[in-house]
Length: 185
Image 1 (cartoon, helix red, strand yellow):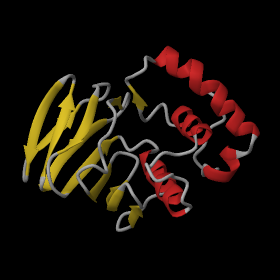
Image 2 (cartoon, rainbow, N blue to C red):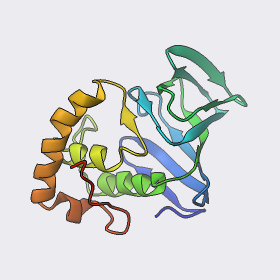
Image 3 (cartoon, helix red, strand yellow):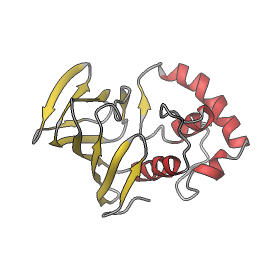
Image 4 (tube, one colour):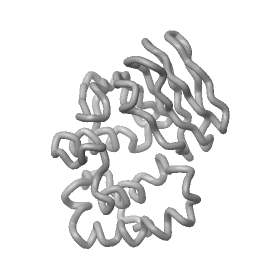
């Protein structure tokens, strides 16, 4: 699990990410990325509030359908359950993120770093669909995409996650200390 002071990189995704505080109540980290590297799909953290603070550069943050331009020194908190997406601004960006409570977000960062080191991403940054399904279902309490609707995601991801588990992806990729044996797969 991510520890304070630890710095990781995810090749092709972020230049570096440094954990500043990691407790059950909060996970705070600083991140540096290139403009097109961290353009996320709209998503929801159902049980976590998330602070987005721009340390250098600029970015756009879409929150509940409204786009906000943030520049150096500006921040915004996205309440738990609120749809949002991080959109790159123009040049390199350095930010601070803070999630309250931390839940298993630190283990998700660790997983992304491991997959990056193992070259589990293709040249476009995509991961094997079975692995994507497994991770999406495993980390549903922390984050999920807003589209397609959850029932459609479930119809597609649950069977793929089940195949991934049968193939041993859970043992190969997920940290046994944090995984559940959810009915979600």
